[in-house]
Figure 1 (cartoon, rainbow, N blue to C red):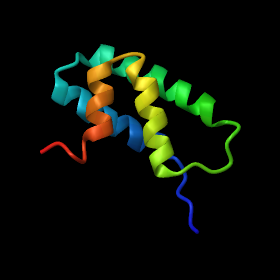
Figure 2: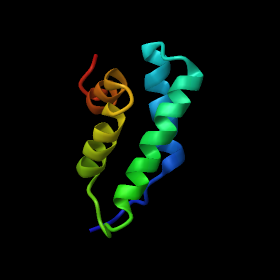
Figure 3: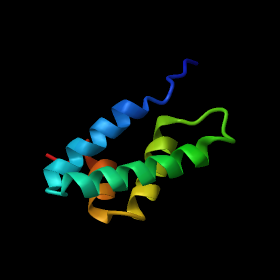
Figure 4: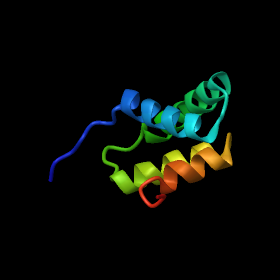
Length: 81
């Protein structure tokens, strides 16, 4: 079993792309993303191992607190044509 470290820069960049596609103003998107990632980081501290699916679920859950549409697009980006 191999593990991939969480790349916060990559996650932030991906979320910014989704936010831009939704037309969310840059400042607001940066704020939502910053808060969600802080919440995710805090929730992950006690965990030693987390799957990609668990991470996606957690990021989606935290994003929903700040912007439901952004959370939806992040959760379903691989299914959206």
